[in-house]
Length: 476
Ligand SMILES: NC(=O)c1ccc[n+]([C@@H]2O[C@H](COP(=O)([O-])OP(=O)(O)OC[C@H]3O[C@@H](n4cnc5c(N)ncnc54)[C@H](O)[C@@H]3O)[C@@H](O)[C@H]2O)c1
Ligand SMILES: O=P(O)(O)OC[C@@H](O)[C@@H](O)[C@H](O)[C@H](O)CO
Image 1 (cartoon, helix red, strand yellow):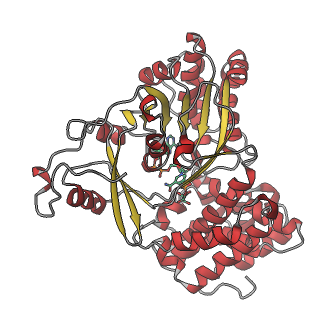
Image 2 (cartoon, rainbow, N blue to C red; image 1 turned 180 degrees about the horizontal axis):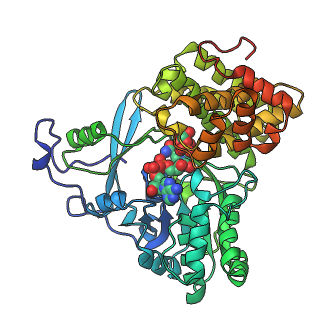
């Protein structure tokens, strides 16, 4: 589906002379809203919105997409009637396509519009890409209702205020409006990189609802289906150079293009009581047991990304492709992949050798500048799913888990030296970093997993791997 250029591409016209991309320039019909999305960012546009556009029944499925913390992305997209250019960036070149499935782009703070749309009987789905950190999970994997933002939202909901600020607080408010309207069952489809992400979303939403109004929690239990998914398409943040590339190739101005790799995958498991688009037309896979797919992706892809994010930056690299050509980083990644692979089911048809080879090729696409600093954010939440399960499984099998431990050690070194360290538990990490020696290691481990922090041999293993970025141990 390549863009059909109406205006000849021009490398020389100043940007201001070019027309703006919108539905006058490209008369893409608007489908009625049946999907509400929370977390309008780069990934939603390269993945769920793209799959929805490819579905054979796309004319019936419009998306109203809400931003999270700031209105900017909604304002920019609304100026273009929701249209944007998807740039597929392969090793050999770019291809361009206009995506029109987002029919409304809305500031996340507009709770009037959110509740009206979720309460509408036509709305069948709420999809989420609000980032891992936004689920407010504690180290036990449950919603932490004492976290300041969650507690503040619960107080607001309890006082009858219609202005909660967290995405789950907003979703709970909107679902209450759906119950009041009698609009019936709905599916929530979590598309964040979390293990068992449907259950996580259920626990978050149900945790909020229960603390607000136990009767409403029972309605959620009977009327909201939480679908688990494994989502994959490497999509870095859009840069000014990307905007210029679209202007030059397409001959229009687009303030919201998204650049992604040609590869994409979506595996889903769960019920859709009010229907769904035919995403399978674009290759989505509907399965009964999603866990093997999830672990393959979260461990092999996201685990390697986090390892490269910390070890790679400590060794002076900026992007995934740059870090992967460093033999020390590559060796650490292969060692981690060996550990992860040893704990994936061999019988599930996961084709791990092919998957690893494909990953190495995807990571090496130097035309996708995937910044390690972006991947490094919110590490305490991510390592719980990317390093901890592999480390625990390796140790349960009688092996050291040294490569998974190296990911944690590199995160610790990075947390102590990074110029900017973004994490929902940044204060706890900073407090741990004020301690010395083994006490510091224990306290940092406790931030991601209290059980590991209580295991003296794991603490010693991680301590021995800290500060080794000049050359990783041969035992890896
Ligand atoms: N980018 C990728 O390659 C990719 C691939 C697979 C999965 N994902 C998943 O999608 C998520 C979003 O990725 P993206 O590239 O779209 O990021 P992004 O920064 O472009 O967009 C994230 C959206 O979530 C909102 N948000 C972020 N933190 C929030 C918070 N604490 N509370 C409320 N809203 C918040 C932001 O405002 C924004 O609307 C990732 O965290 C990951 O779980 C991303
Ligand atoms: O998006 P995050 O922050 O969860 O993780 C960073 C990357 O590992 C991630 O975005 C991958 O590129 C993506 O999961 C590929 O599908």
